[in-house]
Image (cartoon, rainbow, N blue to C red; front, top):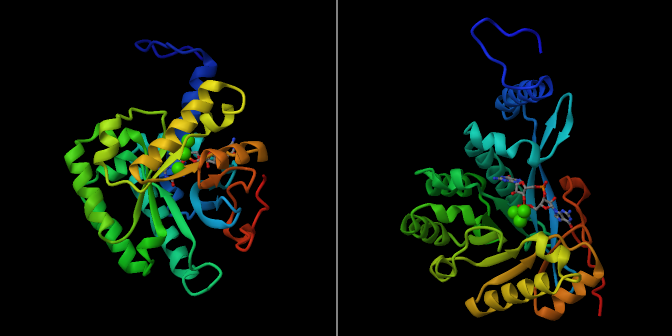
Length: 279
Ligand code: C2E
Ligand code: CA
Ligand code: CA
Ligand code: CA
């Protein structure tokens, strides 16, 4: 770093300063991403035990003019901090609902669901429920094909408000999924209070389940817990057919991971695809 001004102190080494400059630049670009139409949704397949396509999860990407494709790890956190995540989330929800409406006309796609990630900050907006209702009405999407993925960080909100809001939205027919289950603040007492439809087993458990007995029993416990509570369960991050077979044996019914497909642009999704299930 050059000599700082007389009354300023530099607490950072040059490389740290560079990182900060980069971040400021990124945030500035991020503010324009929406109007410049640089956000994209990629879709990752979610399959049933027989390998047939049940639906997709919509995952956000940022097509940056210079940097190319930017992944959520590099911008979602900043979008949260800058308060942009609310608008970004609404854009994602709208785009996904438009897609559902487009799929409704075709017998091959009409049954497919789309899961959309909702950040805690977005869900906490007082007008969140109204926004969702407006989007559903505007796009004509069938709410029964829509899943909203919440994370356990949501539980830091006042739980009564959370339940009221969820219950109101559920009247439309949409479903709620608890994402990354087992990694957050989950309290089992909340689990039976919240009007959920699905638990998603975090990738970290699936990744280790065949190596470490610990991870195996966590996966087994989540599957049994879901069943006991009458919830669907989807395993994330399934990468090998051995993992898929083991999960099926445990009674898991929904699967997502590179084994079935990475998140991809709509044009690359193959709707009819059915994978042969392993023994
Ligand atoms: P997530 O909701 O847990 O999404 C699953 C992530 O795991 C995705 O990363 C996906 O590409 C990755 N993944 C799926 N299968 C596999 C696998 O078999 N192996 C490995 N190694 N990874 C797999 P991605 O797309 O980078 O998204 C990261 C996170 O960013 C998401 O985690 C979600 O928390 C957040 N995110 C993405 N889109 C949105 C959005 O529209 N709104 C909000 N609020 N958050 C989003
Ligand atoms: Ca998710
Ligand atoms: Ca997840
Ligand atoms: Ca995750």
